[in-house]
Structure formats: C-alpha cells, structure tokens
Image (cartoon, rainbow, N blue to C red; front, side, top):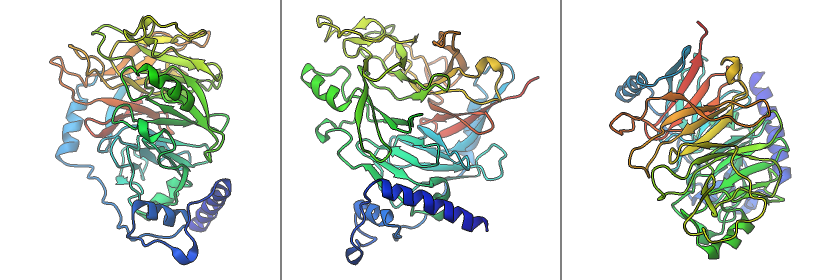
Length: 433
C-alpha cells in the first residue's frame, strides 16, 4: 500500500509539472534511441520513457579515505557542547539541498555529477552515496534547491532543469523524470560563457519564484559589458516562475554571489558576495547583503567590496541609491554558502542567526578562511559582525585539509558542511552538558 501511495503522489506532482510547461517529448512514432545523445535522453525522460543507462555505482563510505577524513576532523575546533563528525564521503561536494519529504541530501558539484546522500537508518551517518540521474549529462551542476512541495531544481552553467518527486524517483536508478525550465544556452548569452564564476546557486522564495545568482565572468568587467550584464542579470540575481516564465532581474551590482537564503523573519533575500582580487591582502572586504526590494544595486563594479573603489571604475560616477553591505567579512576569505539557522538543536543564541561557509583564500600571501562563520542578528534585524564558529581546516603552514563550501540543516537541527577539496560532508551537532 505504501508503494501505491507514493506512486499516486508522484503522478500528481508530475502531472502538474507537465501542465505547467511544455515538455521536450518527441512524437510517439519518432522516439529517439536510448543510445542517442544526452538531449535524446532528456527527451525520453521527459516523456517517462526509460533509457538503457546502467545504474550508477555507489561511492565507498569506509576505508582509508574515510579514516583520513575522520582524523582531520580531530583538528577542527568548535564552541563547547558542539561536535563534528563525518557524515558522508561525497566527491567534489559543493552546494546541498535537503529534501523536504524524506530528508535525502542532494549535492551539486562544479564538475559533471550530482549526488544523493541517504541516511536510511537515521543514525545521522549516510548509508549510501550514489550519482543522481546517470542518464543525464550535467555541466557544472553546482546549484541545487528544493521547492516546498518537493521539486528539485538544478542550475547549471547555462541551463535550469527540474526533477519532480526527486526524493522518490532517484531510488529507481539512472532514469529520473526531468523537465527543462531554462534550456541550454538561454540562462546567459552563450557568448558570455566562461570557466570563471560559473557556480550558480538557487533558492525558491516565499513567493514561490525561483531565484538564481549569476556571477559575472570577469574579476572586474570591461565597461562595454555593463549594459548587457545589467539587462540579462549577469553580476546579479534573477527570478522567474518555477516553469521558467516571467523572468526578471531582481538585483544588480553583485560580483559573484555563491550563497543566499531567505530570512524567515521578514522574507527578504540575503546573500554573500565575493570581493575583487588583486587589490592586496587586506582589501576589499567580503560582504553579507540584504535585498529589501526589487531593483536594488549593490555597487559592483564601482566598489570592489564594502566602500573600496575598484581601480578600473575609480573615476566613474557611482549610481544613485547603491546599497552597502549589512556586514563585512575578512578580505579574501571567500564567503560562499549561507543559511539562516531555523533548527532547534542549537542553543537559543544561534537560532535565527546566519551560518556562512568560508572556502579560504587563494589571492592572499597569508591565506585565511576554510572555516564556518556565524553572524548573530541584532534586535533591529540586521547582521552583527561574523565570528568564527568552526575552524581547523587551514593549518599554520597554510595547508588546506579541507575547504568548506556550503551549509544546510537536517530535520533534526544539526548542521551539514560540504567540502569540495576533501570530498566530504560533515555533520555538526550539539549536546548540552
């Protein structure tokens, strides 16, 4: 009976998705071969037809690598009462999305894989890590996010795709239902594709729209690109209906945001932003920003971070109404994923505050970062100065034992941390003493 109920739920979800947008299904008498290109597989899966793709092999969770990761975690320092443990071995782990129904964790990468992480016995350690949607060819599928009703969105370098009932269909192997929200080449102009700043992030907002951050390809863009980027939302945040319609630019003046989340208190969108490189060790600062209303400009490229002017635009008039950051972070620490902590496990002083993953420096003579920061909120709802919450992945001699990318909350209120350098996800929990 449980299987029948799940199938019925999935059918309803899928039917609503199909009605919401045109599928890329081929005519019944002209179905493409299962051995055709990835586009052919997309068409078959959109029409609920199987491919000949074999199931993906799971990632080993024990052995020498897992043991080494656990030893490295012994060096991580946390406030009293907190502990950190290895949750899963996940190659190239970047941004995470925790399923609202079954708690399965979907993990994006900056390469060509998305992974599912399943804790079947609920002992707070993953039992299984498997590549997701092996019948599909992904290109930089960094951005993963769920709608409240269980639809998974994956934002690639230049495409947006959705997977209805992903938490249930992934159990079937390589074949999963997929629909294009923004087809390949339509998220940004193909002429602006780059190997730089291509790790997208996404969120489904309280208005049920899909929000996507689009980092721009340059350290500082040339002036002839400004109008184009402003028009299409490169170097900004865009939003659209979940079926891809009614796309609009939501905010501009952002260099490269790789982390954003909605405040439960006032429903506003907050985001991290990475500052300009090549301006020295101690400037400009990183940023935590809040979008109060659509159309706000956050100052880039006139400012490289905070109020530090860029060399390229130092003589240009700053647009009127530019919005400054609510809080500044250490220069070149690379603030990436962020969440408002809505769990109940951690002490009251953490509830409602912001956790941020700092990936760590590359453009600094003495690296900093590779840690988890916490920014409490003031009584007026603004962010206080971020403070170190977890550190130890960066040794005194400048070696990275790991580099945190994203943070996410499990249903029990514990905090997950992804690490693309070590290829792992960690779990931070709290026990009062």
